[in-house]
Image 1 (cartoon, helix red, strand yellow):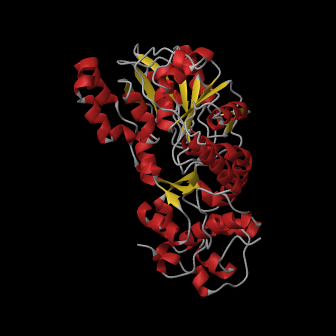
Image 2 (tube, helix red, strand yellow):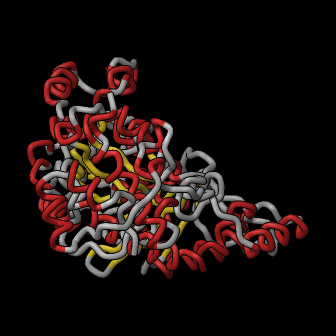
Image 3 (cartoon, helix red, strand yellow):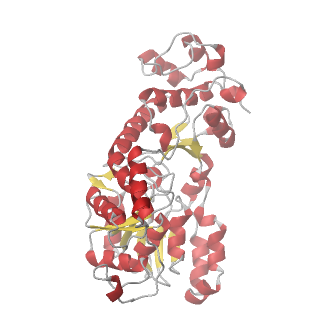
Length: 452
């Protein structure tokens, strides 16, 4: 199978000692002659390594049929008599994730907001969260007038580091919100151990990790409540959409109540329900359920494909100096790989900047995503929140001063300077497609002296 677009002579003339040894051992097969344009960087006018697009989201006849049936039924609202798409989706997702209950919402942010409320997060509380995530993880905490306290990451896994949790815990800490970033699992054994020791609730942000496995269980089922996103870029999507799952009836009833205007219970006639709390309307509608439901039948194949291709890519990238893929924790099983993240060490690429490296990847036809560039603990939303009238009333000046002094995450700051991801849909193809991604990265490495 072709892994390398370079001739053996060209490869040996420019490769590192490690890569040469890999060729000699057969780890990187050398290939026959290729055209000059195939070995020239695409950003400089050569041929692209990846000459295939990976449209996302993917369409499917079953999705079209499901959506059309809902349209024709006229039952577009989940509580219409006879409406079944959302409720059926919730039941099936709970079964597939090994949990008792599921609440469908209009977004992953709404699911997180509802879940954090359900576990008791309130004004003046503090919630541990990672600085490497999407802003929704943080906003869901702020919306409850609680303080997001950032726990630095493990530089190799990019996940919240359990070893750094206890120093951030105080008497006001109510919960921890681990994020399974990029679709790989956080160290849930380590996180749960510390949470249990300090009587903290655990809300998993599994928005990027639907069907990712950790020690035989699905992410989202490992804490008190788990949350997913079905925004269009996710492995199954409906434009927007989200869900919360869990096994505790009381917590899930609170989650249900919060997501639908504070209704007393999820059972009985809507006309006979009482409104118990002031709460938003975060309900999933039947059109969203219609788009999502058929995709559950496609989910396992999608995850299996990405896992296989990602592991194959990792096994090859180890031979390219300066490319360090996101590491797994022991017990990591199949994974969504929302993005295939890796660290880029520019000193192995003639100090070519990450921005230029990314442009070269894109020119080779490799779709990238830099969710990694943000230090969320340093985003303006944090200081603006601390300076708000609400937070100044809730938190003492001493606490806010100490918070600012301790709001440092050096590992995440370092990761921001050197990490990049490849979109999951690029891993949805064949092994040959994955070879071509590898070829593109190798070509950039071999021609690094030509980039500025």
